[in-house]
Length: 187
Image (cartoon, rainbow, N blue to C red):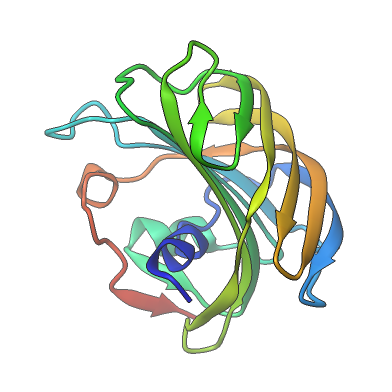
């Protein structure tokens, strides 16, 4: 599994519970039970080179925010992670229509990196899953850490569609500004 997939799966949900519906499966794995849906808006303005990104995670297991805030990966979790990060745009992520892949653009035309990953972490936090090869993420509203929207994603082993309403999560600057933050495994 590629490093980007591991980073997406490790950037697990944080904070409150949120809500989501997820339809479909990838490689025979689905996400019919949703325990946590969260948005992480990183890095904070205190980072030396702030560049906003938005990570939305839908998980079948709670407790991931605490793990992430301590630079850990959550064990035994099935996760759908959505990531939107701008290329050269220093402004916050805006509501809009985002296309998965390097050729996406934000609502004002800046290039974006839009990724989605779906998979499962084991008891030792090893991750197995797939990156989306095509699809869209539609963000309808952003209010602080609360984000609402929908997705329609294609993976090599299947497809997932659904909608989400997140609860926010705040990371300590030491975690949010780091480039390689995951050091442990949270059971």
